Length: 303
Ligand code: CAA
Image (cartoon, rainbow, N blue to C red; front, side, top):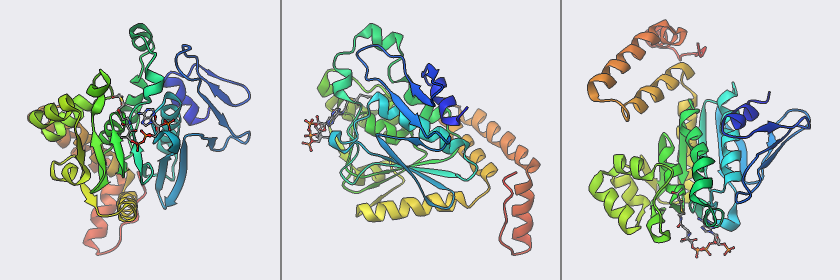
């Protein structure tokens, strides 16, 4: 089965047609999701995202729903999950870059899709739960490059990335309160961890935006840049640097840092030490340390 189809099934897609077409069973309030795969088993033909490989080892996903400022509809999220799954299983991809346009990373979950939802349909169909695949199924590093609006679900999507870069003028925020609701894709948890309770409460209760410059100052973003071009160039550079290391070590590094978000310090340090010990069993640890001693460039085997 196409790896993307496998993840799609896990994230709620019920059937894979014999004509290599995925269709999702959904209640009538949600738009129908159809992602076609080429008859040769190649890349799916996406409607709401673009998928490229701009540098060696780097897979790029560009959200591409310009008329709705990249609002994150269910079909878009399904495509995003498919593309991420595809990169996750690709032997040539080591690091993934997620971006939008200069004007909008994403203006949030699709309000027009959500407006008619009822409690029972949202609850029983686990609305928005498949967004969690972004963080649970993905073992390779994900960099978000944010320019323009990153609001509501767009802010939450950016916060799910392992590294967040943005322009200084990027427009972050959790404005759900203005719509009579609250963040639903982890904003109250991840933003609070990033900026602390006082700031998160102010932002979520008022719906006020914050700039990319503030995002960097508060530790939400790793770096902010003066222009969109600089943002994209630096994000690609970082992705290429990461893609140049041992995949085994990179995956382990991501895993241990993420554990710090879930475990207390003592358990976290213990977990890190166990993974550190385990890496003495990898070929790449021997290759890396031998290359250092011999003043040579390490040629990773990714084993
Ligand atoms: N959902 C659906 N459509 C959206 C959208 C969204 N989140 N954001 C923008 N759009 C659409 C607009 O409806 C408009 O479409 P039409 O041309 O068909 O009317 C188009 O995108 C362009 O938008 P604007 O004309 O509003 O553009 P603007 O430059 O004047 O304003 C904006 C930009 C400030 C981002 C404004 O569009 C806006 O406030 N968007 C909504 C932001 C928001 O509230 N996001 C949170 C959503 S709830 C959520 O995300 C829940 C969660 O936690 C998962």
